[in-house]
Image 1 (cartoon, rainbow, N blue to C red):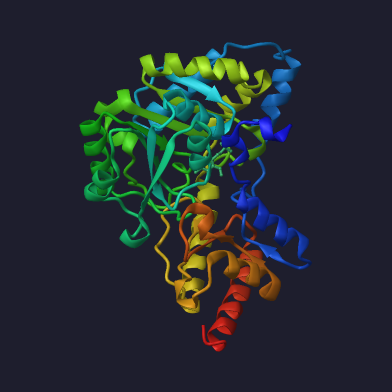
Image 2 (cartoon, rainbow, N blue to C red; image 1 turned 30 degrees about the vertical axis):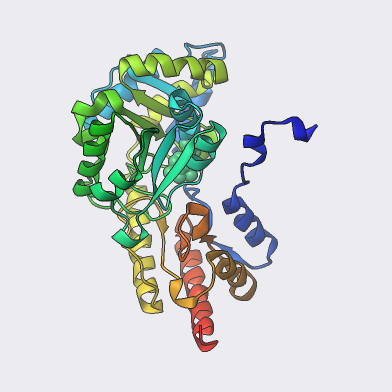
Length: 384
Ligand code: PMP
């Protein structure tokens, strides 16, 4: 009966990132720099808080949008840390940022509506837009240092455009949108009455203090801004599947219906633990990532692969166009011949690049980059 399924689902590709991670796992001795999975444990006080919730018997239905205490804690945290002015009643606690993105996009898209996404981009946006029957409109930033201009956005807008998705710091580049890029987005969003979805899951993993963020910079656009956040990355809680969505009251009150139909609520006995998580300081983790970022930048420069300096997240996205191989071929050969795995740029809509993740032990990273260096030397010897 597969033929009777929704063709949009059948047409959806499987994650090629997982595919390359699997290839790496199946290759004996292969070092994998593929997955964006923090290599730190979840902070112990956060884990202990789950047991305390269970001991208190917090195992029943809670309000759809999350426990009142967690919604209050999120609103207070976002106000204090990022200057955002969302009240506790403008928060939906979601099943990771993934559900937040589904809720936001499926809540606004009618078939045929278009969504502008600066690429390279996290693959999920395209999948959700496709499932909703929308049109995915990539705006290539690879030749503009991963920054946006008003002209680029203007050329991508049509009468069908509904939203622009921003992800800064970005997966896969680690780059941060500068003030000019954000101003271009604000101008186009105002002019064409668009939503701006800010995927801020890497916001706390930044290497420079004064990172401009759309949500903080344009409080006057709060009515059209939807912030999607996650506990996954800053607190090393990927398996917990908790995140949140912030939206202006009238928008949030519609979106919450989707969340209610879809998941009812997130897990009751994780709510207090998430309050505890918001009190954790991710700085020590960020310092480790920064050290690895510096190391990877230095090694890639020695190897001679051009790269735009990442200012956040835990990815680096070198340019491999010099070798004349597709990113998939480059990565396949690198796994087989050099026993090191990366994710091909095509997975993010950006041929000519590979994504390396530095969520791994320093020694593993050093060995992985040494292997990459030898592989690149070998390609050069082949005359590539
Ligand atoms: N957005 C981006 C940019 C991501 O990289 C990820 C995870 N890799 C997510 C959203 C989803 O995160 P989660 O569902 O774990 O919160």
